[in-house]
Length: 259
Image 1 (cartoon, rainbow, N blue to C red):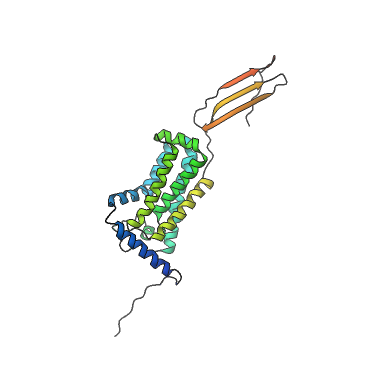
Image 2 (cartoon, one colour):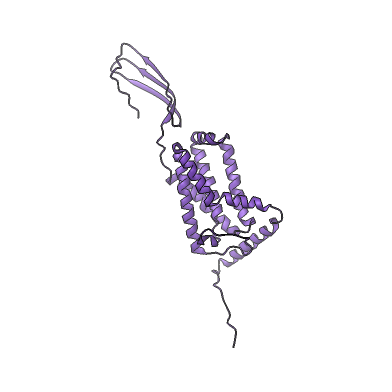
């Protein structure tokens, strides 16, 4: 009686060479750097980009700083978008993780699959979103950062990008993912950051800080010219007015409109 030959589904012909190259590069990098890099550093980067850590931190920032909701709401919603999108892609492709993947305890079923890297997508989402926020809301970001730490926004932005790149690299060096998993995760994360900034942001309802305001009142009928310099959005409003009255003008019943 002949033995039964077990076969496994083969990958599409066009993708198989890429998958083979990907696996070879990933194994080479893992083998090369495993004796050099400290494992605790790679694990620290892994934990720092874990959803179970980054989402509670983001939620805490939102609850602690409601006046900065324009920063923290896209951060929260982007986390949920990343979780859903990466899980869907993983369950669609179902690529097995590297066979040399060290001890790992998947939190959910989708974590058993490798493509794309969720930690990389989360790190690139955070760095891209923060980059866009700093680029377009530097004063607001500066107030937010100064509330928690005493660093300039540019310095913090550099640190976030360095952390994101190191986290993405560590996924291959730790043996969790293949090289192409990380590339795909980086692309997905960057796109999520753009989407979160453009479409998941909300208008900040907090008032503006008015740095300088000049009101000039001339002869009746009353004409008022207002020159206002607005710096940044804050909780408290501090207004300084210089009013110059020309002639015998009665402003008792004057109405002030802001548009």
